[in-house]
Amino acid sequence: MKKWLVVATLLTAGLVLTACGTKEKEGQDESWGKVEEAGKLTVSTSGTLFPSSYYNDNNQLVGYDVDLAKEVAKRLDVDIEFKEYNVDGQIAALQRGEADFAANDFGLSGDRKDKFSLSTPIKYSFTSMIVRESDDSGIHSLEDLKGKKAAGEPNTSYMKLAESYGAELVVYDNATNDQYLTDVANGRTDVIINDYYLQKMSVGALPDIPVKILEDVYFDLDHTGFLFVKENNELREKVDTALKEMKEDGTLAKISEGYFQTDVSEKPKEDLLESKKAE
Image 1 (cartoon, rainbow, N blue to C red):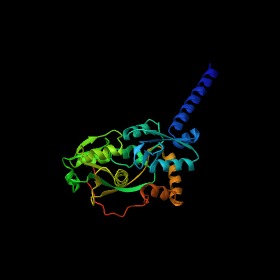
Image 2: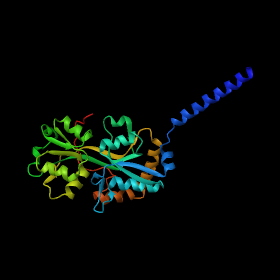
Image 3: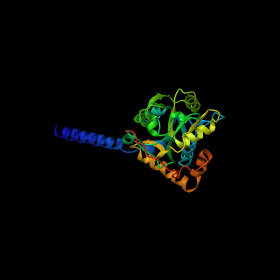
Image 4: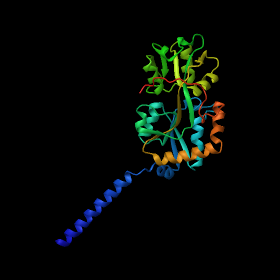
């Protein structure tokens, strides 16, 4: 009886040790190991945000963030697959483990800081406002946003900012730039608050729509990068290493100048105001 008791005790101890080992393994950061094993990076994006992520005339998914992600995958010696969602969908895909990172001009603000992290900066920029060409939509300062109709996707920092100044929010779901700009021009909305460089490219690409960027009302220096779940440090560090190499060998500047006609990986020189950022 004692012999069987000893054997049973040893077996039980073995099970406990095995269980502890499994638990420890589950707590490890295997974000890069999973990508390496699959041989593929899965990236969430929109496909509608010019010039960060959009379809060109040949129906190919391109853009500044998209092209950088492709180059990162190349340098990490893995394939890449893009999955398209609106902003909320991209974030949900990260949380569900359906994407390794998101590439869609993402910054960090509000609650997002608690759950996510950014790669090393890929774009420095600031915020501006698109208004009607004829009358500036009656906007000459941030305080003039009160009572105006601000267009954008739900839950973005730009919409929260507009709301904090008393604007009425008009929500879109992954709409294209021509729809946004046309609605400002025809008075369905009054203003679009967003990244200056994205707005500059959008207005330049659609010159027949009578809108413009409000001059000299620029604010909130910020930067964007690839968005990761906070725990995936190992993968983020691999991506950061590739981005650092791209910065040093001029690839980052070359891709940037191809889309923005300037190197957005360097901080801008414009005089900027500070807004009362919404938390």
